[in-house]
Image 1 (tube, one colour):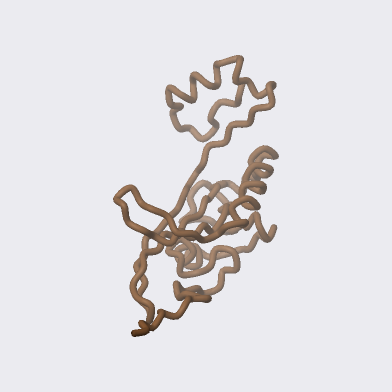
Image 2 (cartoon, helix red, strand yellow):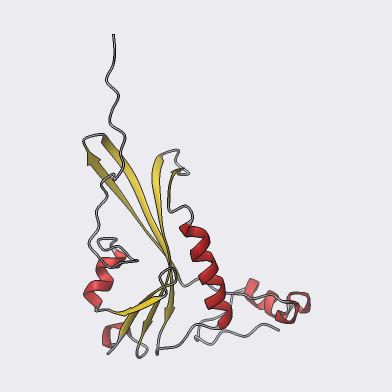
Length: 172
């Protein structure tokens, strides 16, 4: 049997069914992880080459009370980060038929003291790719979540094209 929720939230019907299903037991090598946050932000950017729509996204595992990741969580998120880092930006189609540049920033762990982040004495931002955990403030966290800071380096970032193709001049 997989472990019951410990966060006080009510389980869904699907969660109850999978937890009570002996065929889906963790003894069979299965690990079940809930995803705390998939954070994304649409942005439009205009430069010399024209306008484009960007979608920034990252996965955030939240740990209050300075809880640590379970071994299953650590292993899964670590491997997912490696897989996602292979292709961090590509063109994608939205359900509305729009073309966007999708930037995947990877998987991160947000860890803080206490049960309320607003009263936390310590806040840490952990990066699975670089294996670095940094102490941050709520203001830095806000800027990470707005994608004003690079979630990997915590340095200011922008949406300019780094290796943009120059527009072709018409020949006649």
